Image 1: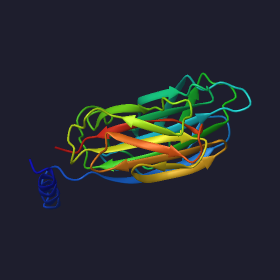
Image 2: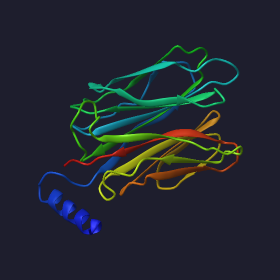
Image 3: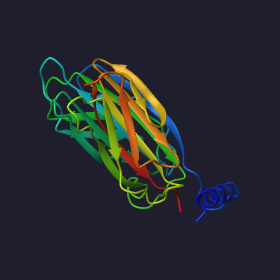
Image 4: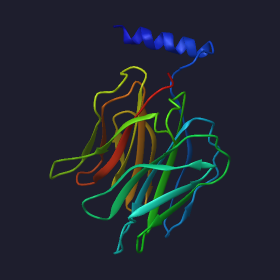
Length: 234
């Protein structure tokens, strides 16, 4: 089967006004705060029936504990947690939230819970258009997720190993990572920002890649992250 040809046909149908289309993306609020929460992002204007993904990194240093829970609110949307986990060193954790609906302009409020002496939060919100609108809060657009891992004793590269993509031509993949040094992604980079002890890096690609990677500039510096597969509108 000629997948490249099918992808070209899909794109032409979208331009002609038929259902379906090619996934596109845009970065919304993206920043950090070196204080305790809650945290407030800059104002953003999410589109209607677009997939919103909010990536978060929490960090403690000099003592303290990470949050055991987190809630996002704002933009007139319901933000559902896609995944989160804490690094083995216990000094940072990553969280991913999704939302979809008829949004409104405004800021997001990030409210961690169960933490003590939390020192840093970084966030990056990415919006994806022409995606599957079934399910609730973007569940139909997020096919699967995977945690980035590095099994070596000298961690410098993490690999996000997704299952075989449902559509190798039209599905996209997105991933973000936390690292102690500058990160080089395997695909198109969306952000690579330093705050306190951690860099926040995000990337995406279309067609998607079931084996994305993030490589830190220095060994022992890469920590972890989360990747997702994104499904286009039918």
